[in-house]
Length: 367
Ligand code: ADP
Image (cartoon, rainbow, N blue to C red; front, side, top):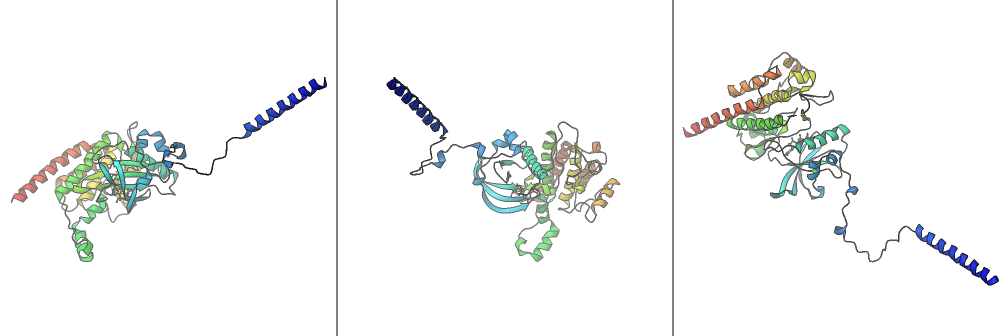
């Protein structure tokens, strides 16, 4: 009996011990990482997208996701401007466009202290730009939405914005510059009426495309157009642009920064933005183009401009502007939106005028 009892006792003891050991093993979660002779090939580590936070817009927009470009591959060249969203700088982006290895780009970088509203506008601009593919609309080539700050990568337009380009090419500036700055003395004003018409018709082409796609730009002005080689001009700055697909017009908010001098009465008074309000702005842009970037209604305060426009008065014809061009401006400034010409008609008229002037040029060259 004693032997059997001893056997049973020892068996129970061993059973309890085994249970204890296996329970202890379960509590050990992992083996400690071996520290010696650690040889990790970083390149072979799997990429884990959870490491990175995507900005809201690219999370839901597959077209933007497809444009994601690794920010570390951007090679900074120099600052070129300061926009509403933050810095703009010139850079190289290897392989961003298939046809060119060392593509030059303009990087728009959202400032770090950007308000939520500004961030949304920036993201909205990206979501809009990705929809456009037209030779007269600046092309969005890439986005850096993974990590911060968010950057938009645009094709680089060598000659900068149209407003500055016009100022540089105005005869008045030429005389002032020749006397004061040797640096610019080689830069002779080189824009003639044919060139101005060529610029105007490119912008009309871009605006026709935009209106046909159901968008209003809301901030069409020479400062928001860019110039490249051979007088190539593209519309940019879509921060205020909106789709009017579902509505016949877009109603702005009272917080919008509004370019009064480019706006028709119905936009100033009722925040109403339509393709026809873009046509009014196009008329003002034509005026800027032919006055070599004078400020519309210069010498007047904002309040005086509002009063002037409300009374149905319009800008005077800039010097050396063909009558037909001023007639187009006046049509764009019709008080009744439906009386303004469409971009289709504007483009047709500008094409005819451009061809006439080209022929005149050929004739005068022959004489
Ligand atoms: P934001 O949209 O932030 O207001 P802008 O579009 O006004 O910025 O850009 C500021 C300046 O940077 C412009 O006036 C222009 O001189 C320059 N810039 C912007 N985009 C380009 C580009 N694609 N190529 C060359 N210069 C550019």
